[in-house]
Image 1 (tube, rainbow, N blue to C red):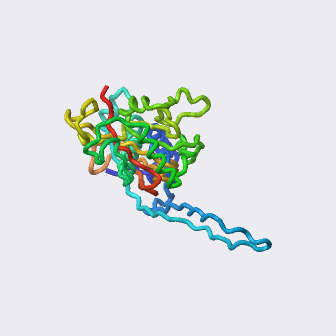
Image 2: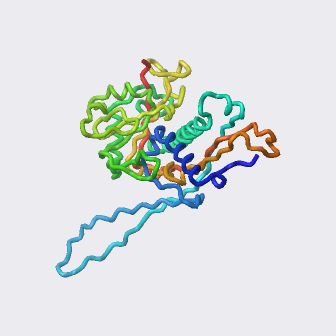
Image 3: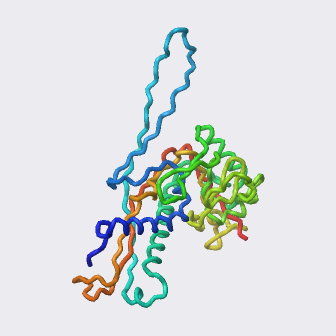
Length: 329
């Protein structure tokens, strides 16, 4: 079957299809709104380089009158990553396209966009929750964890991040389908599953988003505790039956507590290629009715997408994973 791909569609139709998919991916994105980002390169090279400036050493030597101090050279750290390609296709038959009451092609494009967004979030969660800086809410190993999140642990994590000079996050990727950033109120950010919402709301000093006043809530944010803002989404999965005796905690298997990672991040703790902009996603569309040797009656059509992605941890010291349990309701 001859596939109508990015090259085969008109430029206008291609841009529209890509925009529609990105628009439906956008509401799912949470992790992908933060961290070091770069747009998809136009040539879609499979290697991309992230650069960040190295902080200057402190200048503790007194100046000498009339003498210019020795200049310092700016230097950069490079992180080179190799992109991988991801995508999927949805098959549509001519019967469905002809008889269904719903706009099938449009719905397929919507679902493909949502699938792309959740795919990227799942891939990123797999990376950032794999960091080496780990705190256990109780005990000294995952197999012992069976208590709810505590303010004491949050403070221990933020103290360590601050000691490593981790900066508060002050911007995020904009909600537009185009690549860009927008300012946010300075804070550290914690990502976790929605099952932890009731426990987080019970933390001393919790301020819900509805009481922020002039400060705008972030996507998926439920509120803040001191200088940490909590963003919860069901895509950020737990680890079933991995903790200690369940007691009054959530357990998928009924014996051991499920373990929930809560990942705290500072500015530039991790990086990724943004699912934004004209080059971010490539739609493929085959309308039912196109005849060729593999489909002589034109009975099949397809809607698909593909994109390139890579996420990585840029600085282990600027992020930490707390492993805790969730109180059963």
